[in-house]
Length: 413
Image 1 (tube, rainbow, N blue to C red):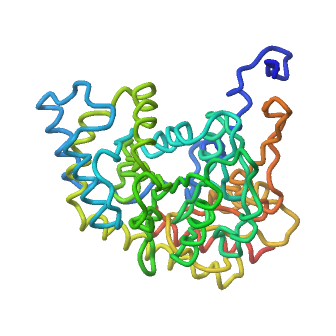
Image 2 (image 1 turned 90 degrees about the horizontal axis):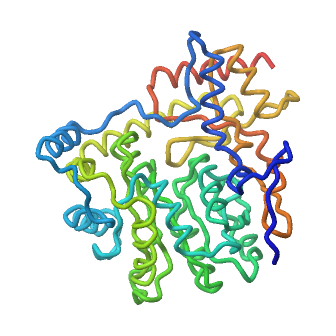
């Protein structure tokens, strides 16, 4: 196949990355900040939590700095943290992964990007949910992979019947996100087991993004890899990404971890880490060790989100929300039938009520490719243009006030 150059609107050569769409979350954030310019805004468009990291985390990071624990470290993460994570996975997630399959990463985002590079080759297909975190799509495109989008049911969970008909001969991986961003959907065992069976029949690797593992409001979170405990190690297919940003509110510390499915993938993933990060940041790893001992903080943070989900009840009563979210940090509101799409409605809501929400069309981009894999355009799924994402993780008073204003705005038509 001949090499083809990507050309920008000005007729000049442009690297492939220049055609990848920016994250709508960052775009909305910047647009709201420009509009605010001193105005009061109820910021329900971004997922920054009201709670903060446990005090022990700050103390451990500070102590590490004082002790000079600021050198290079292992690309996989320090051994004591990997061992502690393996113990946590067994205790809380039902994994039986050994520490040599656990990799510490500078945020789960980097870990996910490394996984996409590990499980597939450029030109291969990756199956993504129809509504997805936009960074998932960016990571797939940066790795030179082709996204295929699978439909969701009326509760925003994978539509298994439709999924079974997707993916060609180059389909290599399936992404699962539960609890989900942007919908708050939670997959139960009755959804996950057939999903895993399908992936095994189709020889797909599975990437499970479980950043919101501790935010399931009814019942327990089911970690997909726990369903493989009876499968021989070299036949396992689920690799999982976790985050310290959500459970422990360590958003700015940038630390996560990945558990790869088997030792063959561990070797490849380790190479990606060596080439891209050299090693995770040392002081923060000691903060993570302290965080893992802070179960009471996780319970309090989960309760904060559970109460926040209940504050959305007026939206269900107003017909703007079909049901309260089952987990995660977000919910999807439906735009009233007033002749506006989500983007226009969000702007009108911001100007009239000072409430910022994120239009969901940015979570449903459908890149168009030419025969050489160049991105020709980035239209969105029109079905998403009727939804708005609301973040639940912030201050309860602001959320309550924002919900009141959203209902008031909708009532005015």
